[in-house]
Length: 351
Image 1 (cartoon, one colour):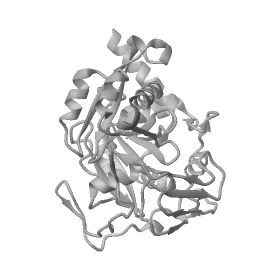
Image 2 (tube, helix red, strand yellow; image 1 turned 180 degrees about the vertical axis):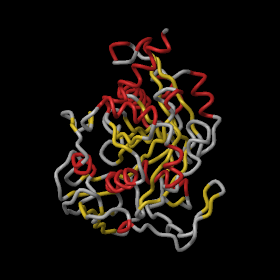
Image 3 (cartoon, one colour; image 1 turned 90 degrees about the vertical axis):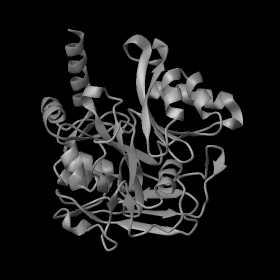
């Protein structure tokens, strides 16, 4: 298993962030190998948006239409360019004949539904379907601090796409630090930065009312990874700005998986996502998986002591990517382990 760097990276970033695809229908049927047994499939069609339908239970089942949308005030073409089999991304070239050999990944067949695979691994979920733990929070916390873990943060953090001429002003109106916004405006597509938001405590912000988000600069907008309180503030500011700003919550289309721990760089290199954590925070590249874009970004929103690689991907292939990372050595960890690690780091810093 290796993710392949995508040509047309700017377009692919817009694709994963806005849900756009080729206007021609595209039928998807996946049967993936994963240890643990069981069978299933997921199917979907793409026509002017993504429609994914899962045949197994889970928090992301049913058909979810994704509307056509606009970024930074200009329309994204509805006809996607063909994805080239030979691609170059930040100096890396992929063999034109390179493909994914999913059958060689794991020995048995089961559906690639993300929640099903997490349940198979022993996940305990909260009412929103977020994995709290996989049976041993202490061991999972140790994985985060000494090994490499994979964490599903979908639901606990918000993926938001914001565009339009007034996007920067909307961020400032939402409480973003003015110096962070100014630095963000000066960046180029493929770059990004942490953005601090000063929010009132009743909005659920942490101590001091300051939370940190990541902003990734695209050719036509920003892809934001934010705590829910900051996301709500940005959406409210975007709505108040009127037609100059568009904001779209990607919760129904995209999944946020984080690879974190001291072994993250090595695991990502094995998977073909080398160099993500060696670049500046906020830097991101686009890789392909089963014809779908996967955005790999360097995130520091959890704190400088816990840098992570954030994978933002279409929910239709989230299970496949999760399973492949686990097969490469990433250990599933839940949000309770992350909370414990962050609390321990905060306590140590306060001494």
